Figure 1 (tube, rainbow, N blue to C red):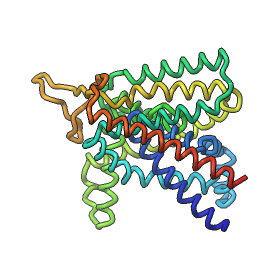
Figure 2: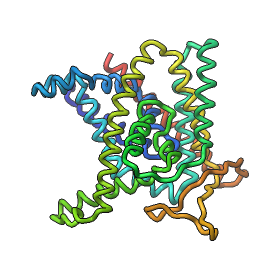
Figure 3: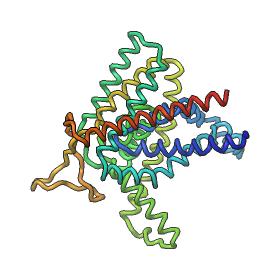
Figure 4: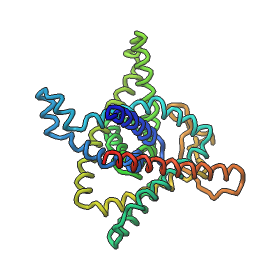
Length: 339
């Protein structure tokens, strides 16, 4: 019975990793919200902050089993496995859905964030002057970021490393969308589309015995960009986790109130009814990125008319809320079983 429960928990951990990976790649959606709502956010932060001097000492001394146990290796490995799989599968499905059913996808994400706000708010009982100020500031910052115009693409490796550090904010800080930050920095397509596709193509070619990519300067450059971005992401993940663990330990209520504010502010990013404004060239034609896709300049949000399409979108918002409530129900049930 215990083995069966462990297997089920492992499967759900991979699924949670899939959800976090997909959420991290969608602009406006935070993987940290998935962790928060699914009930493993604090364990995630705690596990990451165990990657420290003690962990590296165990690793370099060849005490691999002790290292794996010390950093909560089973939890992290299953979660990151799900995230990696997500980047090559679920995220591609999401790209397709956003391209063909954009309104309904954003509607469901909007509903999921509404559900997340309810989930966090209902268990938060420490409202006072300080936490209300933190909530307000978090909301203002979240909304402010959501209305900033994107910058130009920049493949300078130092800047790419910085992008890696910033991009993982969505995993460690619920409500802060790392992928949307990358759009604002101008490197979303370069780092989450082009470089990932370059790695995917390279792996396929290596498996088939084709090593001609070694002579492709553009491919090698893209792989370097991905390697630097990944290194920056890892550095940011560990750094943010240590910082957040300290903050949660000493300023838990203010931090949680700020996180709620960030999540409320992120509603501006995922508002379903918006018109995309594309960047244009001097001749009026739409400017394309390196992947051949139109470059986004900003979004113009509007209040929809009451049509059948609008009601269907509202239905997807409700579905998004129900998904979050379902995750909450599962998390509560799992905690009761463990107790």
